[in-house]
Amino acid sequence: MNVTLESLAVCFQGLLPAQLFTCSSDGVPNAAYLSHVEYVDGQHVALSFQFFNKSRRNIAENPHALVSVIDPDTGQGWSLRLHFERSETSGPLFERMALRIEAIASYCGLKGIFKLRAADVYRVLAIDPAPEECGLASDAPSQHSGALDPVFTVKALQDLSARIHQADCLEGLVDSILEGLEASFGFKQSMILVPTEQEGVLVTIATRGYPENGAGAEVRFGEGIAGMVAEAREPIRISGLMRGMLYALAMHKAAKNPDPLRESRRVALPGLANPESQLGVPLLVRGELVGVLCLESEVPYRFHEDDKASIELLGSYLAIAIQNMQWQEQATEPAEPSAPLPPAASSPVAANGSDTHAIAYYAGDECILVDGEYLVRGLPARILWRLLKTHQSTGRDEFTNRELRLDKSLNLPEWKDNLESRLILLRRRLEQKCPAVRIVPRSRGRFVLNVESPVRLIDHT
Amino acid sequence: MISQALAGFLEQGLSLHIGTRDEQLRPSGARAAAVVVEPGGEHMLVFVADVAVARLLEDIRRNGQLAVDFGRPEDDRACQVKGSVLDVRPAHPHEREAVVRQWQGFLDQLEKIGIPRQMATGWAHWPATVIRMKVTAVFEQTPGPLAGTAIA
Image (tube, each protein chain N blue to C red):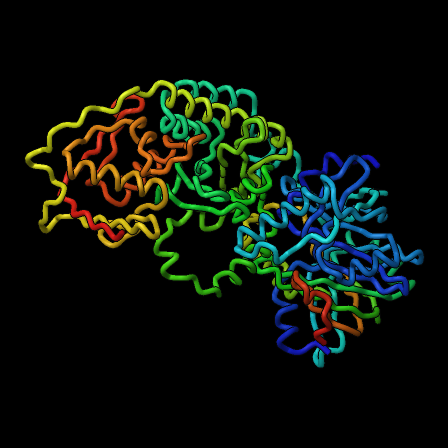
């Protein structure tokens, strides 16, 4: 064959559904759309086996098959003449294909519905161009020209690295990562999530490119792209993948009735209305999950095949940068809590006027509502309540990370408490929902609680 | 066999593929441009660009077995019509309008899932060959556990 299978890897991104032709042992042909073609090596591809359908029964009787795929960069169609070799129900190939299917299902809230039964491996006997699907002339501009070159070039990675090195605190670091991803790679929509103190839950601490900042949005492991990445600890890339399937699954999801109480006490995860490409990268340091980086684009085929290795490298680099910054902040914070100050004569806390904010703490749910609207829950809620109560009773407005760590009532984990990331989350939620109360960093490990209009504290313990 | 409602779905301008096989039961297939369901729903005309039909003709004439797959990209609704060949002839000029209308409908569908119609600039739909087939079965093909269920 003149065309190599490697050169067709771009065709397997699923931008356009592939077509599978099979034939039964009694000579009846069958044509069906195919959800997933996976490049295996220079002589093999794998097809997803999800249902006991006619195509699968035909293959069991007659190992010959034909698959049609389209190059999303040029529009050129290709026919792959195949011969079935084996089914794999475990191992790296199966896991890779299963993860992709699970990610889509999970994105639509239907995790577990669409299971991969097997990765069916075929030898590729011949590759022929489809004469009725000629590609664009080589000098014609491709509509997906953004995908023609790898996204993660060494130059762009160097630029991102330089930007990251300038950050002097965790908040500055996560922001500079997202800014750098836009400046160096053009990724306008991105977010970073970190594990919470609750096992199996991620929380969003930084976003870029969305109308809402989304800080505080929680995702369980296994939920959506970010949750799947956290669970599998593998990058997940979706490139215009099975848009029709997403659409159908999204409609299915829309038919469900959400729990209004539960929904009212959740921050919605930001996201594009019609994402065409998504990429989730685990941020791992020696196997420990430091966070998850998620990127979105409205361009159908944004993340190139050649970017795979760079994506994993980038994830490791960002994870080390974040973890180092967390350790550095913790190691250099002030040794002693700031001395209590006398109560301020005109403290706005506990005042009661028309512009007074009602801040209610629900101990049972460990959550705080501001004027009846959900603000934050879990450890950030406990921290804010502790700060407000201290401020109310003593007038103090300056605090240190260290005193929070030493406060047993906050119940911070003794090891890897991620306090800095919780303070970032809390600061951003306040900016969004209660700007009258601000947490302002003063120096490393020290911050000020600014209460700029009267607040009324309501304790529901 | 094919109801009027189903014919309306099939003729709206979808992603179409036609498949057959050779004497060694090796499948062959190509993109089709349009279909017309004849009154009564027992027969269907499949329009295949001449450049595509060439590689199918020998198989079609030898065994006459056909499978035509229909997919609507915007929601993945799909079905498959199976049957046998009755006749193969060049498409008439007066049939071009219907083929072009369906082809444009298909390109509209591609745009709905983010594929610019320019990508299909080099894709052929005319001149075309008409394959007239007798419909023997129709199957649900929308992805999921019901794919493969006979619907006519």
